[in-house]
Amino acid sequence: MPYPDQFEGFMVRSHDQWTDFHKQEFKAKPFGERDVDVEIECCGVCGSDVHSITGGWGETPLPLCVGHEVIGKAIKVGDKCNTGVKVGDRVGVGAQVWACLECKICKSDNENYCPHLIDTYGAPYPDGTISQGGYASHIRAHEYFVFKIPDNIKSEDAAPMMCAGLTVWSPLVRAKVGPGKKVAVLGIGGLGHFAILWAAALGAEVYALSHSPSKKDDALKLGAKDFIVTGEKDWQKPYAFEFDFILNTADMTHTFDMQTYMSTLNINGEFHNVGLPDEPLPKMMAQDFAPNGSKIGGSHIGSRPEMLAMLKLASEKNIKPIIETKQISEEGCSEVVQKVKDNKVRYRFTLTGYDKAFGRK
View 1 (tube, rainbow, N blue to C red):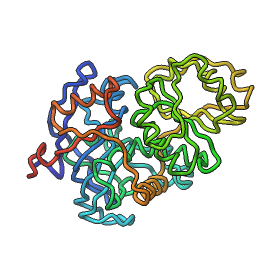
View 2 (cartoon, rainbow, N blue to C red):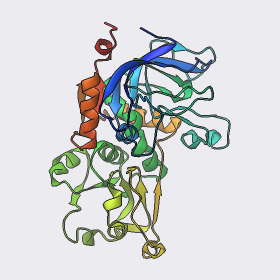
View 3 (cartoon, helix red, strand yellow):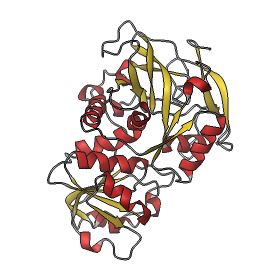
View 4 (cartoon, helix red, strand yellow):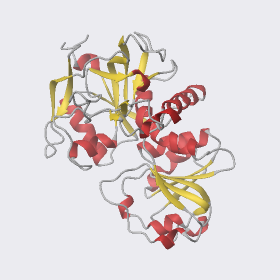
């Protein structure tokens, strides 16, 4: 085992051969006094992983080990750590591993927007080391981005909460979603199914919007009051001025007739994007926002307080995502990223079997 100076992971070496994973060692950043080392147990598979290894979001440093929905055991804790994480704790790491924690943004609990933030993979540290993600034996992260997992949440369920769960939780709570609010969740996939779970648990009246009629039963079981098929002619007309908040989790926004969706927003309602496609948003006119005073926005993951609140609610209400598991290996990684690319997962993959893959047992 190369730890502690080198970790081992399943890495992609070329954007052109993005389904070819190679098990190899990589350099870990120097251990800091507020760092935590995590021996990884499992890791969720995110659409961001696919966008990164294909180069869809632009060139990334290669070779690259993706994965930012990490669950594992803390095996080393820096001398100046003060968040309460101890060696032996089961912890999670999401899509961010560092921020300055000194700027006005960080000090307002918006460290997920810190201009100096370091993403979990594909981002340079000051010493030039490139951060690498969770399809690996270990991960090293600043303690502020390491979260204790409640005992009653299974690791394979907790993994997708680290990115997918938080990414939809943050905009929902910032929009004060709760009783009396009507929320539409657009796109019922990895992000969207979490959005229905959270919005319903927060007490909102939830509507599921999808082009796939086959997802109706799942959406209703997750907590949606109604299921709207957006492929049907004039689907929007009964819902004019209806929704206070539309959370768009779809990865195909560039194909949308945005005026149709915007017409369903209540006065000053928001169309909020967390699905981030490779293509630009559709062309819109300023006049498109005038009939209902609507707006369009987006967000990036969430803050530490939001992560802790989300995990607390999931624990208290026994909220579970719908997942599939896959043994991590070169072949397993290849299979899951291809299926995520092809939208053939219900609704999130978690890679498991890390002890076997990295020869720990």
